[in-house]
Image 1 (cartoon, helix red, strand yellow):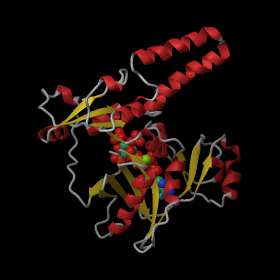
Image 2: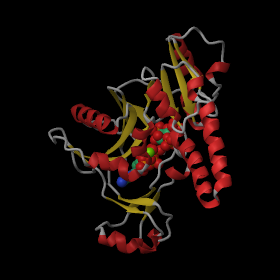
Image 3: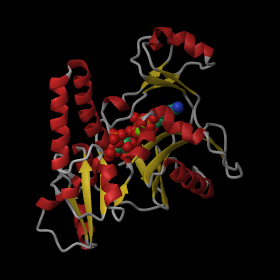
Length: 319
Ligand SMILES: Nc1ncnc2c1ncn2[C@@H]1O[C@H](COP(=O)(O)OP(=O)(O)OP(=O)(O)O)[C@@H](O)[C@H]1O
Ligand SMILES: O=P(O)(O)O[C@H]1[C@H](O)[C@H](O)[C@H](OP(=O)(O)O)[C@@H](OP(=O)(O)O)[C@@H]1O
Ligand SMILES: [Mg+2]
């Protein structure tokens, strides 16, 4: 969900360039000292690989090379860094599910399809394609930095596990208190939702969010439920989250390795930012617990309080 943004701690060039020419097609690549292999959705290509950014990177000896997902990763490169953001299931799972489907077909159809599965397996072997290419690639090439490991990203692909890790933190409260909105996960059809909401002690209005976050448009379709009747009309799986009044101000906290950048959206000029030491503790802890280097936290402050903060969303490799 995009709102107007004011950059605070750092000056980021927000100039939008419509063109999204792949880097390799702009001009012949300069000799690069760092080669970044990337596997992106077309949306990510557009938002991230802007010509101006690619020029800047090239001047610094960094070259972006597209990864061909249809070919074995080990046949491509060499890369210094692998950067990825794909829609739906992550890269390794797509291949895993493909192999699994053959096993399932084999189980229901007997020997003929056993042979089929065997052929697929030997095809993968002879073409050096593993069922978990990124994992295998990491094992074979520990010198390559993969940003970020698919298993770490999994935490952020579900709005329950995403916030559980924050709820488990035991941070000192000297700079402010960080919590998460109370929420209820609805996994099945929602006819019983009104009762469940009452049982859980939640009250309307509630923010309704799809449980799964897979980069699709659907996973960003949010609703506000103002009454109990509308709750039973929604599509599971979803989370129902208590609405936090927050004066319409959101802090986007971007974490890139050890650095933290804060962006205020719907900014008010005289409003103070969340304290830097609190953000540093949060970023450090979540980096360790999630195993991610490139992510962002969306933080709001409860209206009428000075230091009660809620983390409402965490995004991997955000815009
Ligand atoms: N619990 C909440 N209380 C009040 N407002 C909320 C709450 N949750 C979300 N919002 C509002 O809805 C917006 C979108 O919510 P959220 O970030 O969870 O969705 P998203 O689809 O993951 O968005 P993004 O594209 O930023 O990742 C927030 O930026 C905030 O303005
Ligand atoms: O407001 P921002 O720029 O942080 O919006 C992000 C959004 O929060 C999600 O991270 C999006 O990723 P998906 O969940 O995969 O859709 C980002 O899109 P992307 O195409 O840049 O990865 C948004 O920019
Ligand atoms: Mg999000």
